[in-house]
Length: 308
Image (cartoon, rainbow, N blue to C red; front, side, top):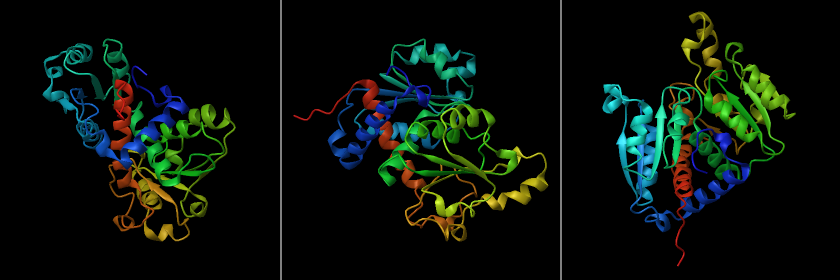
């Protein structure tokens, strides 16, 4: 695995191996605290990020490595007009691995073709965000112990949500996974996902307009934000927005072991009254993201724990 651009670059076996390693690190992170000593990660973030950038940096530092980089294009030579390829080729001489975020779709793929060190796509516009998908899978595994035989509800903006599309593709490779899509008509899942994933693989799915009607069925509830700017008029947004806010009242008939997830940042789509519910996993999800990134960095660098 030279570079990671698209979550589907990974086979099911590779994902399982990464989750297994991430779980081992989670159980005993002290054993891994020197494994990347003298290795350096460059975080090249051409657009601002909080969770993803800090998660990568925390992952490398906890493996005993070093971190360098920048947090926005304004603090790099891109402001002077330098191309992305030139920036990445230059920085690749200072590090062993790169995590790159860019607002333009395809920029990490182009950059990866110019360098000899591994590159991880940390998000390219509305295109791919493979480590978020790995984070989501790690969360499901930690909370459920398996991927097969689950009913997964996706709620909110299913039309534009890249995290939703990526997770659907990843979970569709496991056995007997059923999907329930919960959204307003304006933000339904794109037809190409329905055809290329659900219909092509003969996967069972349902489309509904409210959470309450399907809540008792769900093993996973993946929340996303319904954004005002996605609607043609404000009246439609006002009419629909409260239907897609998760609160304790909507969880009355949910399973006791429901796993509530969210890629964050949250605005108001999950009430803060849900935060203390043991089924709320979105902050645990952030923590799991660090450990799966630790596993990914180790794997891409070919670094292994010395058991001697």
